[in-house]
Structure formats: structure tokens, C-alpha cells
Amino acid sequence: MASTVTPRPGYGQLLRTRGAWTFLLPGFAARQPFAMLTVSIVLLVQHTTGSYGAAGAAAAVTGVSTALFAPYAGRLVDRHGQRAVLVPGVVVHALSGLALTALALSHAPLWALLVAAVPTGASTPQIGPMVRARWAVQLQDSPLLSTAAAFESVTDELTFVIGPLLATALCTAVAPAAGLVAEASLTLLGGLLFAARKSTQPTVATDGHAVVAHTSALRSPGVRVLIVAFLGIGSVFGGMQVSLAAFTESIGEPGLNGVLYGTFAAGNVLSGLVCGAVAWKAAPRRRLLVGYAALALSASGLWAAHSVLVLAGLGLLVGMCIAPALITGYTLVEGLVAADARTEAFTWLTGAVALGQAAAVTIAGQLQDHFWDGAGFLVPMGGTLLALVTLLALRSRLTTAVGGRTVARGVGHRVSVAVD
Image (cartoon, rainbow, N blue to C red; front, side, top):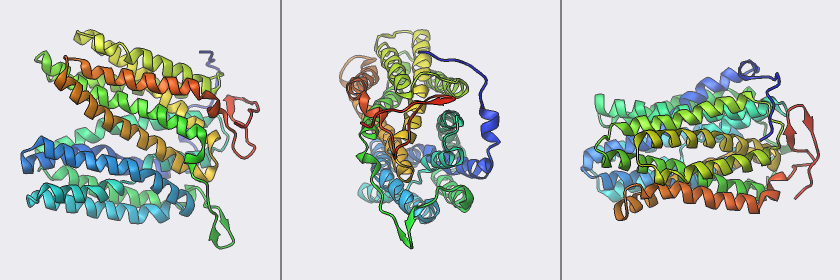
């Protein structure tokens, strides 16, 4: 892939962007609960019911509700503004989470826990997409946009490292319900502080006193293609979680699971940092295709690994291939949809990762139970290969320009692209 490492604005200048810290700090606090929610529910429900099946069901309902409702929340944000949607949303989420906690502690039947899990997941605030939308407003067509995308990818990865650890520590060292209570409290406090920073929020287009009707981001063919790509990325996360746990259990070293998954996550973080520091001359679409091909190729070798060292090396490589695909996908959104549909587009992609992960966990678990050790690793391979075929077949849809704007092909210059 052609690239150049010429001097360019980097993370230092990005973080000196006016007003950035006013939404980054509360945003980081408010997005931590997103990574705490699943683990907190699993540990609490398993403690009160004694069943991992019940715990998994409650967590699954929460996750699916989050993925299904997130895009509609994003559409409401684009239409009415972040503050108008976020404030009632975090209140509903906190109350729903506390209700789920109370039901679990009172040993309510499983159906009641599942009912409470629906609003808990559906009201999960999509802070990450909102932060990305604020960066897009602050930076406009600046070359720092790709740096911001890389920064957000690294932040997401750190969130999913810190969040589960914090939730586990609270549930095991304090009380089984402490994780979910902390999740609800952080969501409420962080969400309200984030919503209070009105100066950096994207403006809502209005005609007089009426809010202008917007076109759904899902109408963009390019966004639909990216959703497939992000489903494939989700299959890697879900497949790795199940398969690494099964592998370490099969060799009698379950404690190595955290080490192997940490290596995978470290590859993601490191490559994300590098991507944000490189001035790419290749077009974003080409970067996505080449990067995704590398992801599919590296994921295809996981099932054949039979030693800890080989699996650690492949896991590191797979992790290093994920961040470029995520970052480029989020960067492409800026040219695929209008500004007033950007938050919705980001939530579709975030939801696609969550759905892909949920499906992969289920399928990988079945493969592990019914076939050989390591069969679960077929899920990341299958998911990424199918997504790659879709990307290659529909790659022309990733060059759509919005409203006459052209899509950036590199730092420092812009060329026109045809409307698809």
C-alpha cells in the first residue's frame, strides 16, 4: 500500500483543538459503561440464579437491544440534537439498569430479567458516535480527521480493556451488584456532563422553527457496504473471545486467555496509533480493501494454530489488521452521508460490530461444542472472507460524494470522484 510519512498534524495538534477536552473527558467517562454492561449483567445474574445460561440470555437480550435501537437513537440525535436525546436517554438507562439490578437481587423469574434487559440495552447512550460527530464538526475538512478517527479507535479499544476489568473488580471485590450500579451511575453522570457541553455539538438544520426532515444514513449504498464490513469485524471479536477461552481451557492453562486476548487487543491499539500518525496517499477505499484483505488472510490462519506462541503471534497480527479497517471505514462515512445523518451512520457501524460479535459468540460456541478444538476460529475466517467478497464486489459504492463535496484521497490534495 502506497504511503508516505511526511510531516503532518498529529495527536498533539489534535488534542489542542479548541474545545476538544470539554467533550473528550466526559465522553470517556460516559463511554466506559458501554464496556462494563455485559460483564456486569453476566456476573450479577449468574450469582443470583446460579445459571450461566440465564446470565448469557440476559446479556444477549441487552446486546441485541443496543444494536437494534442504536441507529434509531442516532437518527433522533441528527434530527433533534445530542442534548435533546442524550439527557432523557441516560436517565432511562440508569433507571432501567437499577431496575434490572433490583429484580436480580430479589430473585425475580428469568422472563422479568429479560423484560428489564430490553430498555437497559435500548437506552444505552451511543457516546462514541456522538464524539466522532463532534470531531467532524470541529475539524471540518482538516487532514486531522483521519487522526481523530484513529484516536477514537484507540479510545474504544482502551474502553473495552478498562471497562470489563473495572466491572469484574467491583462485582468480585465489592458486591455482585456493584458493577451494574457503577455502570448506571457513570452513564448518568458522564452523559449529563457530556450533554452540557453544547458549544461543540453539531447543529440541527431547521427551516424557520421546524426541524428539517433528514434522509436516513441507511439509504446510502456505501454505508450498507460498510455495515457488512463491520459485521465481519464483529465476527473476529466474538470468535476470538470464545475460541481463545476454549483453547486455553483445552491445554489446561485457562489463565493464558487474558494474555492471548490482551495480545490481540494490543495489536489493535498499536496499529491504531500508527494509522493516525501516517499521512496516507492511497485513497481511503483502496486502504480499506487492502487492509481488509490482510485481515481476512491473517484470520484465516487462526484455526490451524496449535501452540500458544503461534496463536499469540497470529492474534497480534489479526489485531493489527482490525484497527486500519475500522479507522478507514469511519473515515469514509464523512464522504458517504450528509453531515445531518453522520451520527446515525456511525451508530449503524457500531451496531454492526455488536451484532457480528453476538452472532459470532453463538456460532463459535456451537462449533466448539460439536466439533474439534479450534473449530470456533473458523468464525473469524468465514466472517471476514464473506465481508471481503462483498467489499470487492460493491467497492464502487464506497466513492459516493455528498452534496457536491469530493472525497479525500490523501492529505494535502483532493480529487473529484463520480457520484455512484
